[in-house]
Amino acid sequence: MKKSLFQSTAWGKFQAELPSRGKYWLLEANGGRVLVVRHVLPFGLCWLGIERGPILEKKEAWKNLFEQIKKLALKEKAVFVRVEPPSGENGDLFGGKGWRKAHAHYQPEWTLRVNLEGTEDEILAQMKPKGRYNIKVAQKNNVTVRASSAPADVTAFYKILKQTGGRDGFHIHNEDYYQKFIAAATKNNWGTLYLAEYEGEVVGGVIATFYGDTGMYYYGASAYEHRSLMAPYLIQWTAMKEAKKQGLKWYDFLGIAPPDDPKHPWVGITQFKKKFGGEIVGYEKAREYVFRPLWYLLMRLKKKF
Image (cartoon, rainbow, N blue to C red):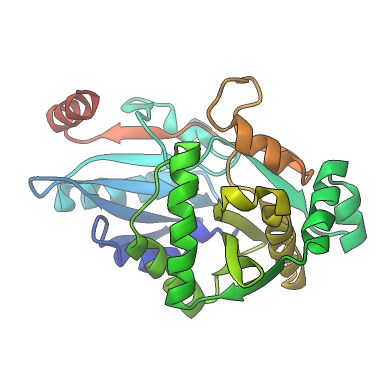
């Protein structure tokens, strides 16, 4: 079966360490498996999340898996289950009775990925000229990049991430989340933190994951006052070369604005990512199946108001 970080035991163990989640289950059936993560709600309730799954060799395996999920939902007092399917696969399984469009989603509906099977020169050649140029600018400015898992370096990354989040208007977790992320990724060898430095000062960072056949740009931060150094371009190129070194096929930039939405809030970051070339990939829209309609309605109303 295809390997996916979000459907791996390693990811489940990391999720179980987070207080807002705390449990996971890897369910199996003949010809399929699915990782299910609990998300805590008030009053002893929860909802169940499935990211980039299920992983199916046989579509008929989903019927067995969903029966297991329904039993799990009853036991855990789950209000609903949300499925964010893999790209272009089995989306028709979630369009029947009881399924509805998800009211929110964690995973992006569009992403950009670069094929790493060529030589480094070939990968650079398929980038946009400005992408290649900015990598060289960072190198000429003597920006250096290093990998780290040290808690102090995660703290340095988080300091810049708070600035980036405030500047670009996106939500970030508390520092403990990123400390746990890097600790779990390092322990199980599925990711690392890259820091860019200039004259001894941390000016940017990226948390990248490496799993299955894919390297992934998961989180990124950059110091605005050092934007002319073009450090983010060199960090990404460093992570891409590491993914290639590990024999991976793809480097995924994890989320871009929809191609038909020029006013989407991700347009700016999308322009940055597109400078690395690659191909656009679309995913099936997230779907939800509601087990407790009244609680679901109350939860939606609370979130709305």
